Length: 247
Image (cartoon, rainbow, N blue to C red; front, side, top):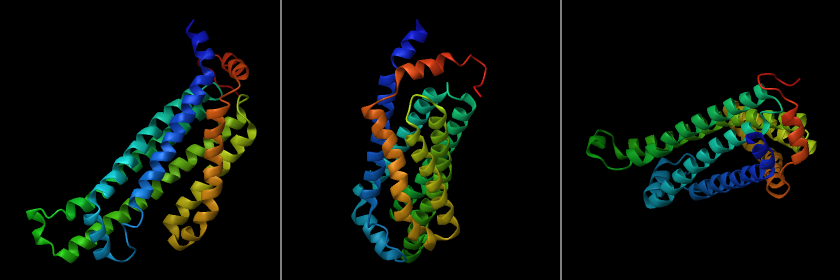
């Protein structure tokens, strides 16, 4: 009975994944929009002034970023459940990389919060000059951006493995799997470029964002609109014995 319930709920579960994926995109994008323009490159005083003048917006950006991370943790569990019958080891590895990326991303939010602390005017901060506190605020934002880039190494690996799982599955289109794998390679390229050569990364951003958005966006839309091929999902689920990996 439990197996039958799991099989008949395959398409609704796929659509739930699509909804969570869409909500993740919306919160991640809004988080970036809320913070856009607050950090001024190379100008600590202007950055500090913007943060203090728009504290609610700055905090809202942090909150939406945390919500996006929570959504991705849920998405990781849902993806593992969907693809575990394709290859349990590969699905588990994808989940591991995703959770590490979420942990690094959540840790990076501490650097996001730090500017509010150093600019808050607490009495113990009086040992620092105003200019020093402004410089510290900008430095923390830079560290947050670098930690965020590191997290995308793991998210890129996650997307790449999900693409491979889709290619090995029979219940989702192979073209979607190829696009997801391509998106994962793009995120990996952008992450390492950001760490090794920021100017190169700035040049690559428009060329990598498009395939990345296409890969993840196509999977999101397919899950929302079409779900999965239930019959093929059932066949693949029944074809795998507990405790045995599929070739």
